[in-house]
Length: 69
Image 1 (tube, one colour):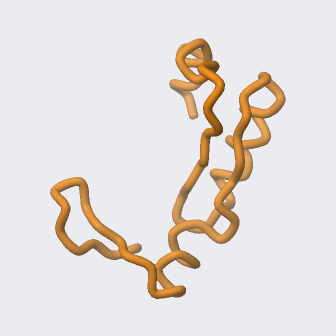
Image 2 (image 1 turned 60 degrees about the vertical axis):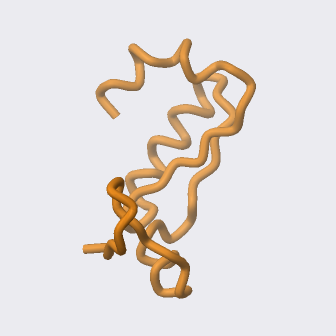
Image 3 (image 1 turned 45 degrees about the horizontal axis):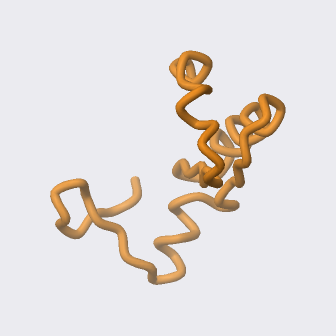
């Protein structure tokens, strides 16, 4: 979150931003902040915990199987 004020111009490119965290709480706050600053943003309600519980894939940046902790 602390980096976002310096990156607002990069986020204003017309694309929708999906904000994700582990539980959806922090990403909800960031989403509200982005919307208040004119960014088209949505929160992934329930975060990665709900994603994983739904049986959807979780992968690492190295493209291997990951997990939500």
